[in-house]
Image (tube, rainbow, N blue to C red):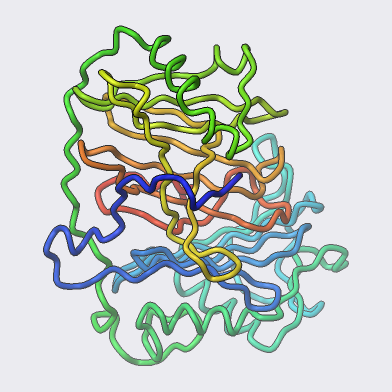
Amino acid sequence: MKLSGKALLFTACFGWLGATGAATPLDQPVQRIFREWQVTCNNLNDCDIRNTDENMRIVIWHQAGPNGEVALDIMSFDADKAQGVWLDGKRWDHAIARSDADENNDYASVHSNDLGDIQALIAAAKNALTLSLTSDNDVTASLSGLNAALLFVDDRQGRLNNQTALLKTGDVSADNVPPRPSAVPPIPVPQVVPLNNAPALIKSVINSQQAILKQEECEPSEEDVTRSEAQPLDAQHALVMVNCGMGAYQSSSVLFITPRSAPEQAKQLTLPLPLKDEEGQPNSVSWFTNAGYDPHRGELFHSARGRGIADCGESAIWRYDGEGFRLISYNSQPSCDGGEPGDWPSVWATPGYPDHSNSR
């Protein structure tokens, strides 16, 4: 994905609760590494804790709020049978649901949505270095950094010394945990006014925006032009998606907000992303991967795989409200470490709208 901060930044809104008048502001999302573990907490404070080993995936997910749902998934990609749970080569004596490889999943796994089960495993693993689902320990996951990751999440969600904490449990009632934001922002979608000149709009934008296309290293061939699209935004504007080329499994496009009556005045669409870049600077997207726009829902889609098996990448949905694009959801898995295809942690979610995360 190519990022550019030089193009026009079209309106996008992140401050949902400020717009709806709710009293509790949303937390900014965070994605951090603790040795061999990654933590992602979205703006609603739902947190995903996962290891970075390639042969085994452990994911602990805890939804924000006093009654937040919880899930544990352990997937041993090189094992056919889940014999149990071993910590540093010693079997953990606890009943927890195990599944062998089958026609749906080609790996052994453990799953639980029971907070007590998950707390028990975390307590048992507190001083352990490795975890395995087989007695021979051929495939293990490192637990280095897990305690720090769990403590970070407990603190962020207001669960320290709470009955619902993952690591630092205590006697404090779940009622003391801060609530999960639930205010649903109204996002009206403009009435769809069909286009009657889509090919002409695309041609005009490509001809008039050569400087920006060259800056973005987008040189569409005739085949790319045929893959380009124009969709209605509102009565005055269209969204022109200039296809810049097709790779092995995805394509990228540069997008323009285009006045219907004056397409030569099109402005490039660049949208901010909720996570900062590696230098700590605001991040944005100007190349949209596998882009699509549904005018009836007013939704713009972007999904970029880091590699073909989709164990890393990002996806986003924005909704157009007649003035700008509002971020609905954003998922990101920066490291390619052998996880399930498309299982990318939620970084941004909007109450009342699908967050397109894998269900746990």
